[in-house]
Length: 241
Image (cartoon, rainbow, N blue to C red):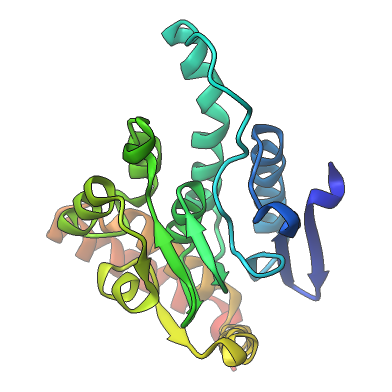
């Protein structure tokens, strides 16, 4: 399974690539577990993580496991989904930013992964969809990935309509940070990486830490947290030219 997800280091930059282009980079549960481990490991040793899909599509969703049989007991089903929630948590727990690169379709689970990235750069041909309701699947697992990423009205539209939206609409929804022409995707990502490499590592980590917690705080708590981080990080010798 090791070649289904690739992890490559270039200095302090780690690139993680779902490598199943022949099936649109669909992800099985064992792959999801491996991906979580890779993100956890990369976050400890890297300045940032680039997250990609090989080939024409970003990720068309989870691997289809044949015809549906009898449903397992709820307790068993809950255990089977823990691997997905753990993967979602790995993105959120990462102490360094995760940059998603979306060149094509990000469907279902793929849409969730694109949303979970701290920054998502998309090509103009990228497409996003949460199709679960159309397949009689109650989509709260995918919704939990987007709940702190997009506004409520955008989330409800994606879920209820099951529409496939283009990159421009994904940008207005907050799924995407920036859209670039397809032939400029690589250079746009390289420019962003170059900018982040100029930033002192304590600041890179502090921005991720602040973004992770401050959005859930009341205003005064978020301000106080900002004061403390500002004083702590800016007094570090690593922040001096």
